[in-house]
Image (cartoon, rainbow, N blue to C red; front, side, top):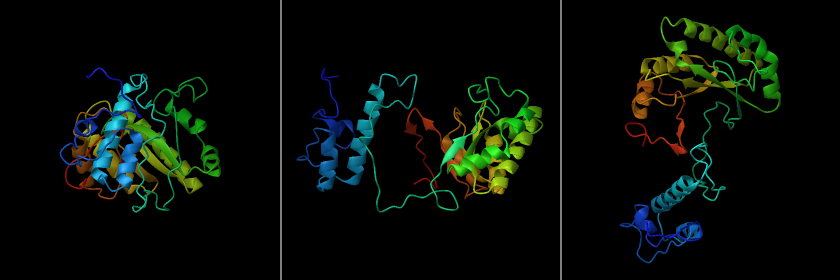
Length: 260
């Protein structure tokens, strides 16, 4: 707005106000470039809250300035400059063995991905059983993978949906094949065609009751408040790990009981 061009090496003088911390940061603290954010924090001149606010403002504006963001939401040209580390808080893995998630996604199962299925879609769902076999999962494990991500339409958890029943048959085939290998767990990523809260909750119930599942990823594009969806799942399944999809590079912020 002031006609100037700013970047990592040249911050606007009022960056504290722009980042929403103008009322809390000390007047003698100068944040004139990206390095100053780190140095002022290490010097004890800014709080952790102020530092995160500055970093969030920086990353968000670099993202907005990335020319390819409209076609690729994750095309932030930031090159890892802002990396937050919490050395006093150990990273938690939802895996029961505590290992980091090393996952692969099964492409072309219930949606076209001809690049992964020999140039032809698997329109006949029974073809899944010849395309993804136990040998594939053994190979995945042998190269160090420990998690398989399966994209499943919510139709599989909708009563009396004939297509959904076919999908569920193939999901159960895949689960049996994956479990037979040992050491592999499943992340179920839901795909919804609308605000299908009941189907999402039913899917969560199914995942929570099946030891093969590691976690559930909520569907993108639902207009229902994310907190409402998570709380509906938590009512019956308080321990099921839930992954929340990204929205153009920003994590959806959850508010309410259990999200502080």
